[in-house]
Length: 199
Image (cartoon, rainbow, N blue to C red; front, side, top):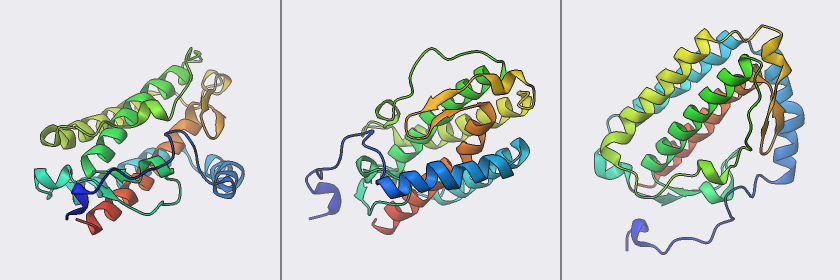
């Protein structure tokens, strides 16, 4: 029996989060260091670099392969509920997150507030993603994010006034959300690699 035919595994609910120690290290050590040491230009370059890595491994894949779900070990930064995805589902998640980050960074950089709460569960992909279109949508979403970030004034005082809460890591300003984009993209690049090892 192929793994794709195996019964859906019982995983934690979306939004359950990371193990405590891993979360604490990320929140109080890793991201504060990144926020202090990374310029907006560096953040954009790193995001583009990881995006290119994702494109390089997904472009050659047959469409049928994109829809194959595989159960992978939990990776650092990846919560339990995301361990049984396909490559297409992972790309769809990145599309949704890129679009959300565009809106968040653009709004905060203008000194405006965001009247909603971020929800991890809302960012989870459906299983029935159209594999024929997901790669182009991923590329377009990533390119749009980069284009918008290059036009934002992330050094103005207004851009640091307002913050928007990440569900795990608390209030972040526009520049911090931008810095967060590349590490998030990298986690899911690693996820794609693990899925492909099992196909």
